[in-house]
Amino acid sequence: MKGGDGKLSGLRIKQKRFADEYIISGNAYQSALRAGYSEKYAKARSSELLDNVGISDYIKNRMEELQDEKILTQKQILVMLSEIASGQAKETIVVTTK
Image (cartoon, rainbow, N blue to C red):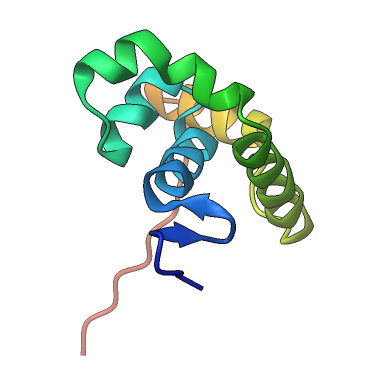
């Protein structure tokens, strides 16, 4: 829920966006840029965002939720991408006509 101070779930909106982007990419600098921080700020302080207790707790809790949802693990994603890149991925497509 958003409060009058621009906070969402105890985090500022940009902080939450940063955390969500970091969960996807694992790259603090790129996550800061995608969250709307300036390039100068992202270069100087993106790693500091990860030290913020609220942000790190949010990331930890969200990662646990995602794990509980039984989505693909990082290893499964890397294996799948590796198979695609090396041409080993096989998928059967059935086409029917009427």
